[in-house]
Length: 343
Image (tube, rainbow, N blue to C red; front, side, top):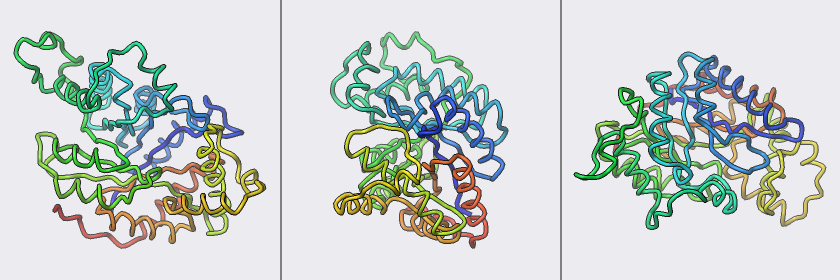
């Protein structure tokens, strides 16, 4: 069975303040472990009214303390916002506390608008060039100790020095990270839940160009997607109305908490607004369990994914949990897919 995993953003709604959203994430992670999900990843976003997840390392530590087996990771650390040594030490610490359970997903974007990004980085050195690539190289060097002879960092160690850096995944919404992760031999995750790019090209480019490394012998590609699953197609469509109005607000530059389905359905939609969100619906999997599971399985097959990672921006936390429960029940009932052959 193709593994299913969870990506959670600690969704803030008009009835769920940020602090409660964080507590709900912890409870959801415990449920995901009980349901049999393979991983539980936490996002890094800043100054966004609908997302409370801004410190994935802290949340991983909290969730690790109340779970036993599920893998926990960042989806991901926005590397441009952090000193590579700090990232290495935080995630080596997590690996030491929860050995064999931590993933380090890395992203290029700031996870915010430009003003928040400036506030995050204003005391940091400007590097110029491809800042992400430079920071990634430095992060890897803290583990390999492959600094040039005479480099001042040769005398500095990322602690705890006896804990390895967790497995790396590069995250992307286009093909840049696909090619880079293939070249350095690490995992790759494509964010189809917000990307307008066709996922097939970067996912296949990663697999075709993958070069084995000491960290990863074979490619591992994760397709991240958004889903709304309910007992019936009609109920799933009702819940998905939250996505529609949230997309429209985001297009206008609004960063408000997630609206309820009732608020979204009562909104006076124009024809152009309807057309806009209908186009966005191409990236959302909505339906009753069997229908949603079949669509996700077909999408994973089409993109040659080794794993599917699901996020559910559903207004009601009980309905959100139920969405994950129904999806896993339907997923397990599906016939096993032949193992993905490397290309």
